[in-house]
Amino acid sequence: MDKTLQLAFDEAKKYGVEADFVTEKTLPSFEIRRAKGRLVIAAPNSIETLYGVYECAELFYGYTFFEPGRDRFDASLKVDFTAPGVPNGRLAFARRPLLKRRGFIQEFPFNHETPMLFDWMAKNKLNYLLVWMKYYDELSDELKEMAAVRGITIESGHHNFNYWIPGKVYGKTHPEFFAEINGKRITPSSNAELLLSEQLCTTNPELRAEIARRMLEYCDQHPEVHTISLVPNDGFGWCECDNCSKFYDKNKKGDFYSLSEHVYKADKIYHDLVQDIAARVNKVRPDIQITMVAYINYCAPSEGFTLKQGMAVHFADYWRCINHEISDPSCPINSHYADDIRKWCSVKRGGDVNIYEYFMGVNFYLSLPMIHFHEMFHEMLWYRNTGVDGILTQFHIPHWSVYGLNYYFMAKAARGDAEDGVIFDTMRRLFGADEHKAYAFYSNIKKLLLTMGTCHIPYPYSLFRRTKQEDYQTLLMQAKELVSLAPDDRFRQELVIWMEYLCRFKAFFDLAHADKATVADAQALLDWVHTHRNTRVFVHSRFDSYFKAIKEALQSGRKWIHFNLDWEDNYILRHIELLR
Image (cartoon, rainbow, N blue to C red; front, side, top):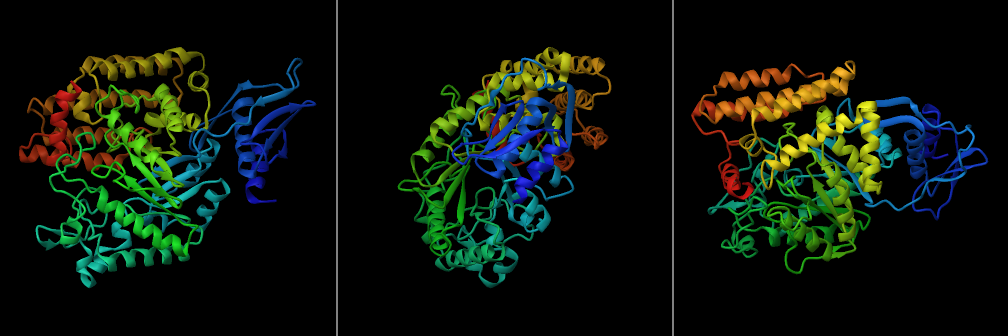
């Protein structure tokens, strides 16, 4: 018996699922039936059998797999199959998943929560994890097998120019491999975290040969890896040498919606590199898929580019508006992203298009509200109908009480589950008899976001500039009411912490923009956040990073807008008129 099928048997026993397993290779997915008083899970393969077990556990045996490591059980949700009148026949129909690739983007090292993550992903039928290469290299063989047994493909990639050509090595031996800016080769920084806006001289033929050689070497050393990335270091900083400059017109700038209006487009130079490297690698290893990213000043396919077999693009709708669906033609931000997605789907020639999403509030993981429940289901349908192959989102387990519903609904929507059935059933599972009060609480958060202006990109300035302290106090009272009805419910308690945080952050924001805030005020808010380390509300390391920038702005007398990057702050100030 293969290990996935053995896991399916073990999980069925663990969750009390009494069912017979049947292999039917013609089915597009698992199907649950009742015949002669017995449950039957029919499936085309072992991973779909495992999915069927988890579906049975949620549908019929009282379990809800909402949070990693914290299964919920409610005996009142169990179905008594021995009761008279329970029909035979199909209880869950086999259907092709809406999107074939469904998963997460991990921007942090693997840790003690990784087993919980892999377990949760399988329970919610997610099958893909994109990680930084430097983190994949630290993943143990045991965890690799745990993921594989659960049907999870791990892509070793993300921003990785510096991984393939590390500056600390090649900066000494091949300085010509690095970008030329203002007539001089850059000296790669020693900080290898992001290397923000430090790129390579991508037209250098020796550089290209070296990247391809290193990719093939990497795949030989990691035979379990079949998907790797070729993604620029984050930011801008493209090479301006004579050869590289032939690929762009410095007068042809990027676009406002993708935060690249202040730099020239880099689509042609990046795409030429990817096509060349992919061809070199696939000539030797046709089983390897090379992924690229569509982002900032290289959002759309360049003229003549095709997404061939063995290639995939992760399309990042960075700083998207969360008040409109991605396909809404009336949105001055999302409508452009939708056009780009259509263009990528139109150039597929055997390759794949995946959406790189931000269902955790776009950037910095600041636990600002993003209620994207019904929109999630609409967007997945639009993606499928447009030709998209997959959906991935950034995430963190430590803020699950804030964004977990987005992740849970994404998993359901991407498989093709019904919108209202999932949303209202989930409210009932999480809040019991108080489901309507809970739905009203989330609806009021959504209403606040929708009524404060036409569009909203969820950085603090957009949110707090257009809302009042009373808005958050009202939401805090609602959260406290939910807790009063179930005082021991941890999830409800953390909703109160979340709302109190928004009240405190709003108060600090008002002080700062009245030029009355001090470094001590910023530190006090950060200290309060850190008193809640044992919750799933805050990603504490991200708060340290963000509040360091706030304190630096206050100390220097600079007007605090966001993260003290001039170009980024300028976009935010220009958004004032656009977002109204």
